[in-house]
Length: 156
Image (cartoon, rainbow, N blue to C red; front, side, top):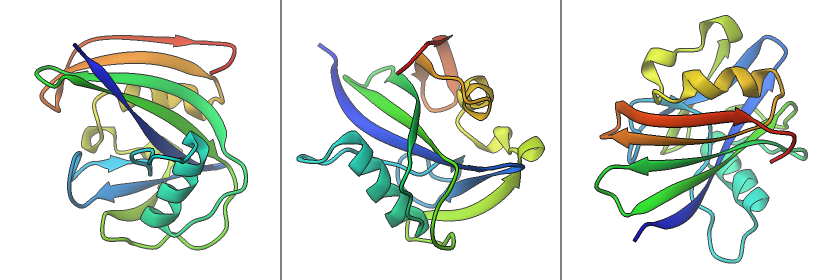
């Protein structure tokens, strides 16, 4: 039987650019991604999103906009990843490298999709257009999408 674990992902967006982090170790290493991680016991999903963003990038945010929720299944793994995706349009602090992530700004027309998770190219445009969405991606390994669904919704 498949079980589910909660995760967060925060994308910091400015008018012409987006902040991504190069994952330095662990799951998804050597890929550009947003900032996030596991929801710890006793924390809300939004609290976890703020904490992970601060730990991984040095930034703090007041307002997180929930943009999406994607469930990931990896063949051979009995645990689904339920990822809650947020957008932050304002922040405090300067992006700072952490043990886990190296932050870098990218112009919106130069997002490095070839060095990111393969699913990102599908849902990033929705997030950038401030559209809310839900989805499911089934992976073989970390590079091959076997099947997926993605739809725009009124609210997440």
